[in-house]
Amino acid sequence: CEVVVRVRAAALNFFDTLIIAGKYQHKPPFPFSPAAEFAGEIESVGPDVTEFTAGDRVIGNIGWGAAREKITVKAAILAPMPPNLDFDHAAGLSVTYGTTIHALKDRAGLKPGETLAVMGAAGGTGLAAIEIGKLMGARVIAGASSDEKIAFGKKHGADEGVNYANADLKEALRTFTGGKGVNVVYDPIGGAQGEAALRGMDWGGRYLVVGFASGDMPKLAINLVLLRNYDVIGVHWGAWIGRDPQGNRANMAKILDWCAR
Image (cartoon, rainbow, N blue to C red; front, side, top):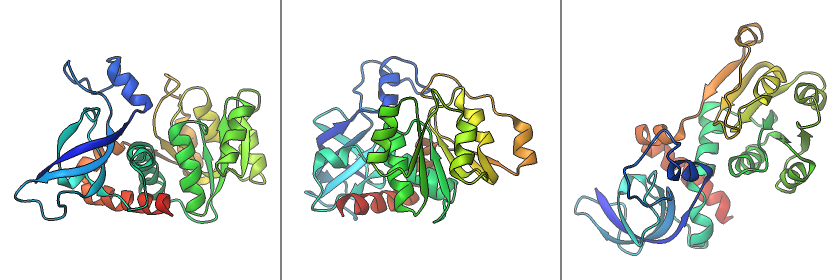
């Protein structure tokens, strides 16, 4: 059930730097190659592999070790590339976009017409959340720590923006929604803005815990979860893809189709 892939491009993300520094939850033994995600061509297939053949163009994610000329991987973790997509762009789609479509589609159940607030909107997962949120029909509010980052988020499709370095995030989210609050918060940052974002949600809002790029975990007011019928939802994409590889492959097929078009 394995194939050999000749790697044509490998991508690095924020968590790759944490792995290299020994600060991530997974600590591979030294020496190791970094880079979780990659794009390349299948060079050979094992006897039990039926869905791929030599020469197929594919993308995948292996946690670490993709910064090599060739890698051996399970066929189940690969997704076929559209013919009009290049390796450099394809290599950067698995982690940020895979995490985000899982968060918004599978975990939050984001619906057309709902309002999505994206924290850290100028980062990799933030930009993915803006783009995918718009494709799913949501109104998107970009949250970031500078006006330049807000402008960058709007360039990628955000409808509104709030600089939470100099504005009250809770009040801004409520102002943008006529006092109601947002339906979904996508938070890969954590830190001091977490509770403010939680307080800026509408009744039945869903708060997606994606990561803690700020280095601090937010102190959420658990009473609000009860009083306003909130959901606080964990998004551990890396663990989920091992439990549901077919679900992840379907998500990546959607991402690849969107990107190719």
